[in-house]
Amino acid sequence: MTPATSIEPVTLLVPVSGEPGALLPFLGEVERHVPPPFAVHAVVDDAGAAATLLAQVASRPWLRILRNDDLPGTAGAVRTGFRQIPNGPVVVTLADAGDDLSIVPQMLAHYRQGYRIVCPSRFAPGGRQIGGSWPKWLLLRGSGISLRLLVGFPTLDLNNNYRLYDAALVRELGIESNDGFELALELTAKAFRRGVRIAEVPATWRDRRDAGPPSGTRRWLGSYLRWYAYALRSGRR
Image (cartoon, rainbow, N blue to C red):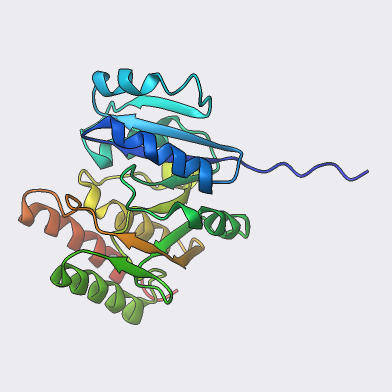
């Protein structure tokens, strides 16, 4: 008899900021779209939010609440999560209904084919964006197209933090970003330079009203351009 094939569980890494109640409808979306086995690691910035969410653990044993022990915000939460989650596929997403979880099975299929990063993209053929400002859309689309044409960068959606990563790869690459806006570009650019297999899948992206770059335009733009230039120097793969 052929032994049963074990399926590596996927972990959803979810930075939670602001009102922790936003996580509750998100958990329903996870149960609806993500194939088991899975785990959700919600990283919160304060003890009060953690206490509010701990009540959900009893009915959802796959949910774990982590306290952000790094810088407040998305980058610190992601660093905290990757220090504690097990090896295997990890989907970084936010609990605000902006990311389309229905494509998680497609992302996992690419991972099991050997891709170590899978990038949902609103700019890939079949992808789309709902809401958001046209100037921001043009800037982000233009920067993605330019990297694709110049060096063959594997995704057109550079700053979308909704990504699937191999956890061991992220720990190997390290996260230097302190603002969430450039985090996905940093990790993907580092992996691209090493010749890591990276896939892109079309996605529907819903604009987040407060999802613009962090305060301090000069700082975030400098960080973003740093990783854009890093990718540009990596050459065509």
